[in-house]
Image (cartoon, rainbow, N blue to C red; front, side):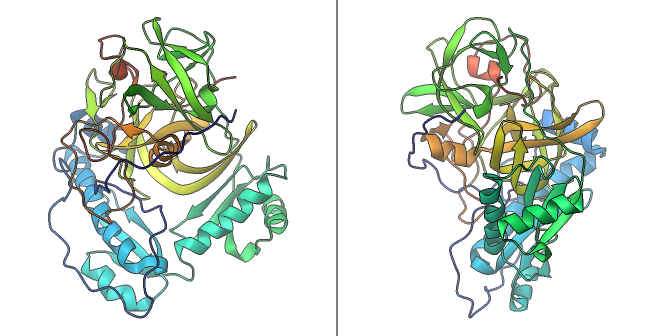
Length: 445
């Protein structure tokens, strides 16, 4: 259900933290001269990148099947790569074609450009250069044409389409090639501009009508708290738009009155925020599945290939990697654009819960396919567009990261820290109770 959004100014500085993805189009740069080379730094430039929270470290080891040393190295490499990719994104401007990580420890950063003259500058940042025919802007334009066509078409057989920076194409997941070709034709897109992945995936909004855990909407549906936020002096939390309509009331994990949905958008986007009463206190914590919390310091976006973890009320704490950004997903209830696709699993009741990369807030769970027994795909609504749409600021620890311009993407700052951070249900409560586990996926009916 679509509600009114309260547009408001960003309250943040750009932050440069780990595993950041470069999703926003940078300002156009002059194509006449390649960027000047910069020497890569040899150490992480983001706060705490060499000291990952124990809960994050343990989950990355478990879910990505890494040794402790590999997991530690991976998280530090992702943080540093985000900084370097952000600098290159700004320097290359419209020639920038995306960036991604590879290798068990995310040791290899690749940056795409449309101009071979940029190779030296990219390599000077310790990255591999990939020369591609299209920059990120034209790729997003193709996805936008598909988005527009989906408003008038039945896309049940082509439920997911996204920008894939690694192949420099927009990829359509389809039941068969004919369905993908028909979708492209209806959108006025040259099939040569698309990649087709044959898939039986049928993403859905995961619903759980069991009350009394995480937070319950109007006494009937359950979702997970995402990130603690404020708007002016009012505290609250970010969550999924499909979990509740504006005016819907919520009760907390302990069964007491909690708050009211102030704004909600679904479909199109999948974002909402709930204002809470004076009994609840916003904190920057996210439950890590081991009885502890990850304290969030910012909201810099993760690169493709980076590790991400989520916390939710049904399945606990799980990790995986970022597979795609700029994803459009067709649910039975409507199409949602601008999501991020991951290899993390989730199940009903997890909707709305937080995704983090290191200590950086990433987004709130929207939906997906599969489960945490067989594995699956989960999509999240990026947090920074949510903050912008509703004029919110995220709650952070105050230790934050250094504010570095061009470090991999926008972050929205808040009160005590440079870029906002995630929280989970009990965290927002400021009380001890049943532990919040993994992140989000689910919705209202």
